[in-house]
Length: 139
Image (cartoon, rainbow, N blue to C red; front, side, top):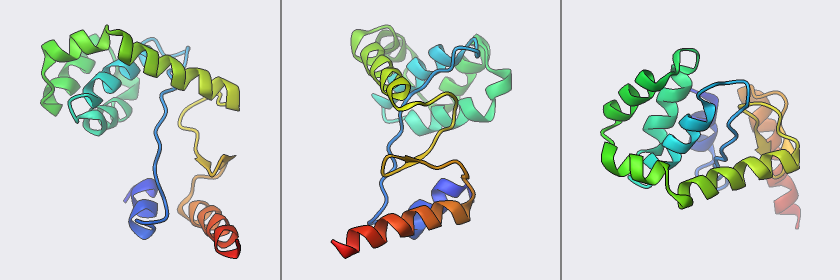
């Protein structure tokens, strides 16, 4: 089980996952992938598309993007309109700007209550979450 799923299963009422787009400049298809995933979100298909993009990160190109979108069952005409529309573009740009502001330099980058988690092992996640929950309980 991937670390994030394990953590979310273990703390269903205490942990919230917030995803932000940060299309890295050294990946030719990162921006298109981010816009596509965000447009797929409008159809409730974000995670299916996102997971496909990360799974095939090294092979990502226009054809692979299209293949992943089709496999997710996304309405391609709507996706194309949304991907090129101001709402999706603004959202991805805002996420990217926020990432720059808080010091993100690569992906994936994980924060727990605003603190960067450098070690993303299950034990490290649990330790960071327990530390934050302990602070919250003490208030």
